Length: 128
Image (tube, rainbow, N blue to C red):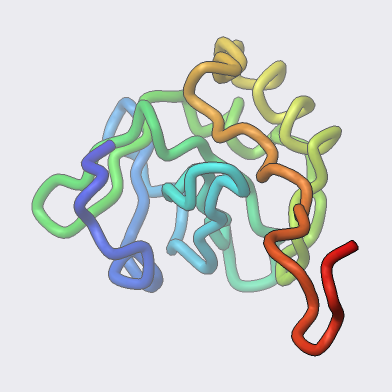
């Protein structure tokens, strides 16, 4: 997916499957913890239905709608984690497996920040 799109602009957009069948409306966008890039969208699949998570990487924003390259049935069968909460690494793994996606390589993820280090000395203390 285009990486220059503001994730907030996706919310409220209609989403369609690979055959052009309407899936629903984008309810929330989830960012990758390491990169900050949009990774998943929660799509409300109906008035009283749940939100289905869809991957954004293979999806496209075309004519103000999100085109998801999977069948509606597969999307509706995606694991249900609820919305409004952070996706755990285990939940993301389930979604990657559900959609048959390759896991992101470690090279695309940022390394852990280095541990805090002491620099210099505390003011007022004499060096020994």
